[in-house]
Structure formats: structure tokens, C-alpha cells
Length: 285
Figure 1 (cartoon, helix red, strand yellow):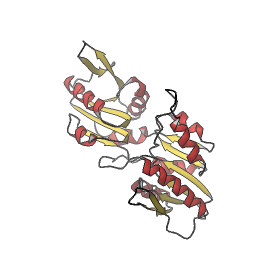
Figure 2: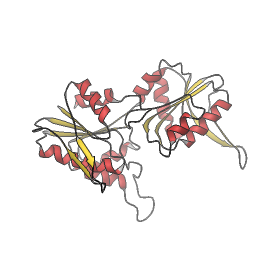
Figure 3: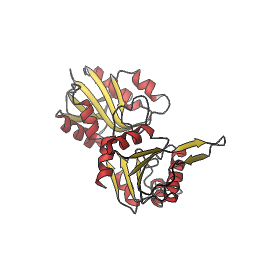
Figure 4: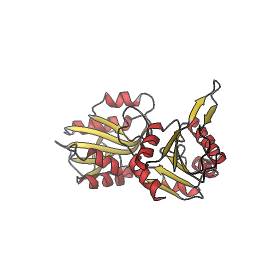
């Protein structure tokens, strides 16, 4: 087996190769002055099963993935597995207004042309993967998040809303602590209360878990509300730290004690590794 790391996932790909005890090749990818992508795999041939590890977000990384697929096929790969830690465009999974594309389906169809298997992590909607004709699996980051925080003295696990309550339940049960979801209650025309739907957070160390953090506004507001309600500490952990518009700076400067994400998107707070669960899935084949 050969692991090929794209430019978006170097550290994750290297860690996977170490766990699997297999060959690792870093693709040499650069951008031309006009923004176009150039990539090259510096080896004679790839007469083996190949795993490409590369995000399809943002757009430059999506193009790089297409080029890497073509390159490994041309070099004789016996099979091609795509590990897509963060799958771009997965949120547009249906047509909401006339004239819109079904973006997630479009991406799946194009990626499907050059692969034999697909592995994702906490994709926004798992049903999106059914647009692939090849075998596919979406892995869950809850086990590694729970393992990371199991020794941190957490008393309560929360999701930002009822829609993500299943994630809080998964993490909470693995840690052996209660779980709940946050609920917004409008007190007046201008006042909104954010608090756990059922549990009391007074004197507790709280962990908020989510699949993705983009701007961080909701999490910052929730953390302050939990502090005001008596929580002694509030941490947040997500799978995908998208963190746009200086979100990391605003989150770390808020009432949160800890801000962490998995290394599906590599940044300064991506200290929770999903390499082990991906390697296990690759090994199972």
C-alpha cells in the first residue's frame, strides 16, 4: 500500500502511513502565478494499492484532488482509495430554489470517475455519499474526541442544538458523563436565553461538541451563556475547524477555556487526530 498526501493533509497522511507501516509519498503541489494547480508524484511507478489523502475544500484543493487521481491512475495504481477528511460542497445536498445546482451530487459524480473507494469523516449528510457508485464509508470522530477529553474532568457534554444531539450522546456515553443539547428560549423581543434543555450546568465543567465551526459566533454566545448560568469551565471541540474570518482568535479570546478540533483541517488547534480511525478503515479494506 502507498499513501499519497495532498497539500491539504500532509501531517494526517504521514501519520496514517506510520500507523499502517506503509510507503508515504508527498505530492509536490504548487500554484502557478495565475492560480492554476500543478502537482507531481515523484516516483517511477505506483504498482500497488494507493490511498490519496486530500481535502476537497477550498476550491484549489478540489482541483488538486482531481489531478492527483489522474496522476496515480497513469502511474499504474492497482486501486485508488480517496480519503477526504473534509468534503467540500456537502452542505448543498438538494435544490432549494429553482436554478440551483445539486452541488454535493456534482462533486461525487466527478470524484467517482477516478476512484475505487471513498472514506470521509463526519460528512455533513451521510446520504450524500450514496451518489458514489464505489464503496464508501463515513467515519465518526466522536470516539477520538471522547478519548481526548476522558481525562480532562468533564462533567457534561452538550451539542449546540437538538439537531446535533446524537453527537453529544455519542461522546457523553463514551466518556461516561451526562449529555444534553442547548436550547434557545426567547424571553422577550430582544432577549434570548441559551441553556441546556434539561441538565443543570451550575458548577460543572462543560464540553460543547459539534461537527464544524465556521465563524464561531454561536459557540461564543453559548459559552458566555453557560458561564452566566454557573459553569466553571467551558470547552469546545469540533471535527472540522473551518474557522473563517479570524474565528480562532475570537474563540480563544472569548469565555471558552479550550478550543480544539480534529486534524481533518490542519491548523493551530487541530490537536485531536483521526489518523488512527482512518488507518483502521483503510486496513479493513
